Amino acid sequence: MKENRLNRVAKGMEAMGLAQILVSSPASVYYLTGTWVEPGERMLALYIHKSGDAKLFANRMFALSGSVDAPLVEFDDTEDAAKILADALRPGAIGIDKLWPSQFTIRLMDARGDIRPVLGSRPVDDARMRKDAEEIALMRESSRKNDAAIALAMESVQARATEKGVADAYERAAASVGGAGSSFPPLICFGRNTAEPHHSTDTTELRPGDAVILDVGLSWNRYASDMTRTAFFGEPSDEQRRVHDIVVKANAAGRAAARPGVPMREIDRAARKVIEDAGYGPYFIHRTGHGIGLEVHEPPDASAVSDVIAAPGMVFSVEPGIYLPGRFGVREEDLVLITGDGAETFNHFPHEMRIL
Image (cartoon, rainbow, N blue to C red):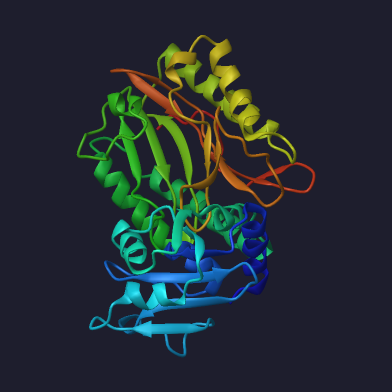
């Protein structure tokens, strides 16, 4: 077990008044045990008591015996896994992971009328929000590799290229720089598709005058990177130049606002104000950023409704955008680490307008 991390979770449980929780997210189980398990439809649960005692309940098919540094309770497909877990719980409230399948929660409730499931992800989420030195080093290197991969992928943006072709080029580039696969499917957009923040990469062919968005990330030792750059194929219009300049300034404003003690909503406000002051406020239609680590989207959000205060160790994206329906869009994204006295930007690929 990662004792320092487990102790942080236990303190978070005490602060919430939770005596026991079940951790089932593969990323969170890995964070605490150093072992990654993809359970599929089978039950996986790390039981934690506020005292710091922990047990991992897992199917024998996962072959964890002797390979996981945690007390292990195993079962197989001929046994009632939920009943085995239920017998180990103490009466009262039990914190449950937010994404644990309801089939397991309901079976626990049926087996134990003296327990009360409550949402219990926050102690682990809060611990994972503040990266330790080992995690920061891995994330810094993941972003360094992503900078190199996007530079290689940009070379594939040529006449007759398709979004899918550029996505494939990024995948090859990520592998060539040592990435262990993409942290999410590459989001490549040409022309009108750039006006859709989450356009699904397809076979659209590049045309002169198109805006080009590459939103890409890779995985390095399980830690994700994420970056977006907008370029133009051929000479951009005056409005394309203006919008690109505004978004770059909004990105810089958001990153400049990031420091310890600042509410995340103020980081969102700093980036959003640049776009609103330029008259494009209605066309910035998503939050300014999201946390990242073992998963590409995790707490905290940099949004107008976030109540999180930036603290050292937090890593999140700053990715303002302007999206003009049916025409084009621009987004510029970097990852930011909150340090002891300010912030560090992980990405170093330039923001200057790139004409391909």
